[in-house]
Structures are given as C-alpha cells and as structure tokens.
Amino acid sequence: MPASNPVLDMVTFAVFLLLVTGAAILAGRYLAAVFSGTLPGNPFARFEKALYRWIGTSPEQEETWQGYARDLLLFNAIGFCILFLILLFQGILPLNPQQVPGFSIDNTLNIALSFTTNTNWQVYSGETSASYLTQILGLTVQNFLSAATGLCVAIAVMRGLTRKMTDTIGNFWVDMTRAVLYVLLPLACIAAIILLSQGAIQNIDPYLTTSGYGGTGPQTLAMGPVASQEAIKELGTNGGGFFNANSAHPYENPTPFSNFFEVFLLLLIPAALPFTALPT
Image (cartoon, rainbow, N blue to C red):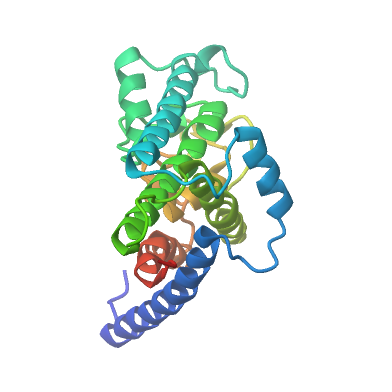
C-alpha cells in the first residue's frame, strides 16, 4: 500500500470542505424556497396541488405543533405497518429470485422500527436475508420517508423558533410531499446516476455463480438494485445498505471518487439546514 501524502490529503480535505460549504449555501436557499412554497418555475405545481386535493389538505391549512406531531406519528405508524408486513411475508412475495424466507418476528420488529425512525441499525445481512422487493419497496422507500420526516421536523422547529404572530408551524402533509418531491427524489436520482457511472450495480437479476479465485470452489456474486438504494441511503444519512458491509462493499462504493461523493451526500442536507432562512 503506498504511503499517504500529507500535502495531497490536506488539499483534498480543503477542496472537499469548500465544495460542501458552497453546495450547502445553495442547497439552503433551495430548501427555503421549497418549504416556503416560493420555488420559481415549479414544474410539478399542478401535480402537487392535485395530490393535496386527493389527501384533503392544502398549504393554507397549517397546524399547531400538536396537530403536526399527530400527523407525523400517524404517517410513520402506517409506514411501519407496511414495512413490517413486507419483511414478515417476503418469502411468498414476488421479486425474490434467491427464495429467501421471511424474517422472524423479533427481527421484523427490530428492522421495521429501526428504518421507520431513521435509525437504520442493520441486524441482518442484506444480500442473503432480504429479497429485492424488500430492498426496493420496504427499505429504500423507508430511507426516503424517514429522512423526509427528519427534514420536516427540522423545518417545523425552525418555524416554531422564528414565528412570533402565529401558533402554527406548517402542515406536515405538505412538508412531507415537498421534502420527497423536490428535495430527496431529484437529488437521489442524480446521485444514483453518478454512482452507476462509477460502477455501482443496478439490476434485478438472479445472483451469479462462478468459479472461485484461482480455480477454487464456486462463488456466488450478489446482484440487485444497489445504486438506487445507496443514493438515498447516503443522502438521508441512513444506515442499512444493500450489503452487510454497507459502503465498504465495492458494489456500493466502487472508486475513490464514489467514496468522496458519498461522504459529500451524507453532509449535504445537514450542512444546508443552517443556511435555510425561512420567512417569519
């Protein structure tokens, strides 16, 4: 292994710090526009309004902290129940080419609680224990929703600290919609494409079996929709990657640049929040 170059390390750190700070300032302004409803040239405005009509709410229907907390808990309770059922019955659900069985009750409860609360403590080996359906509709979806919930809480706290003429702190359903639609989803799509360009895998193929290194016994190579899950895992500061080794696995983190980029994703939204100036 080549010796570390202290000068190069310092330059790399300085460049990284400048990139994160610059991106955080821009992202903070973007977050302020998103959550204040002043995003210019919004291409999804009509879709957003239609979604609010379907839910039965609107940005004008703001809530006190009690109503906001009630809706937040209700939404995440529903997400917990759906994830719990996916984990428990994954053995009989589709997108399971390796025919992995459902999780035990105790592991199901642990994983569902962990991913719903954005804790993402991984008590399982993803490549051997979770089906593709579980990874896509269960864990990846909760990586979006739990991260969006945390972002909503941060925005609600900001409103509570800065508003002086009202006792409302926003509408949870509106904030959740905007967090996913305008922040996490587009950034995760861009991040997934960049990770794909670096060699992260993305497929729903059965696992490959090949001869081991040097002609030894057969070796199984895990496949799966990795880049899409890795993108939101990092962007939402989640744990629980596709593989047991998480970002130490080359299918999740193939190159030095992907490692640099994934650390950037981890810090982007937390660093942006101090620069998010919401209207009072």
